[in-house]
Length: 172
Image (cartoon, rainbow, N blue to C red):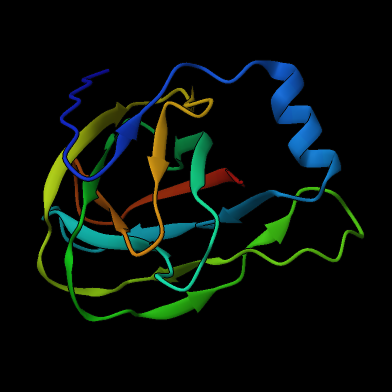
């Protein structure tokens, strides 16, 4: 696994403990979005998911966890996170789910699939996933303040490689 961290617009904080994460979930402030099964038809880096913490939001989004997987045997996928991309078109809205089943809270952070980006911004995290799924527990180490966007790109080892991901965050 390749891991690069450069922080520009993101604040890095100490790890949140498991009790805090559970408490946020019980308050209905923990959300997730799934990238489903996606196939990249080119091996070029692709702008795959855009996360936007709206400037009108009064809450910060704390990255919680991301599950990444390659669905094509013998292939790999490189996932890259960028901060503050320049967005031409947001893409297709992807509904986030509240992790507390039945809770009425709605997320203030928006997520989109296949955005159009004119400048990816600042690279701050890289993961290479081979045959085994990978889970990273951010546990609040990265915060997305109101008005900030985050881009997830994917680059596959061969055209036709399929991948999936699930991403979760806490809003405070």
